[in-house]
Length: 178
Image 1: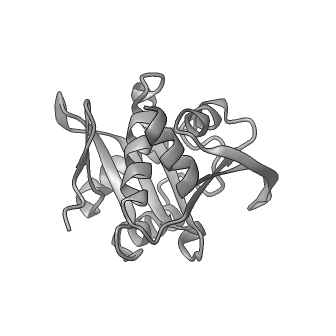
Image 2 (image 1 turned 90 degrees about the vertical axis):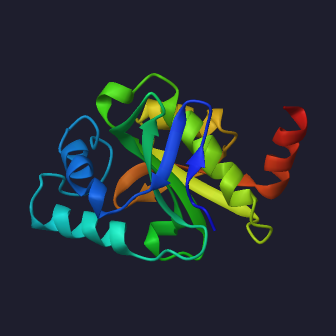
């Protein structure tokens, strides 16, 4: 199965250790990780966490994709993911993270929308979830733009978070409307 995905402006390639340094650098921007639990300082925990996420097999059709602009295919803009919730499941979740210079350009929405399409190409996927810190206006906006709807607010790793979902029915309704 080809896990290289495209959008009109973007290339989404499976994220590998080749992207380690760029992802490590992205995470060390305190604005990028402001709403994300963890110690994003380039230290051992950060390096081990990143390496484990880059090498773990999340199952068929799941994983992380590195995001690149077609106009600059070697410059990492961030990543988008579709993995078991909190890397263990059983629910399937998606997420996104971008370098600051890529913010405000619709890149996260475009990449995440493509991952939703990829997810529902599997007939067994009935629902995809996502979550974001309740004060992360940009991520909350991305979730809404790609058709996810709020299910509830709760703490996630001690932080106030808003949880979203999109069901297969929601996705099919959106596709019919487009």
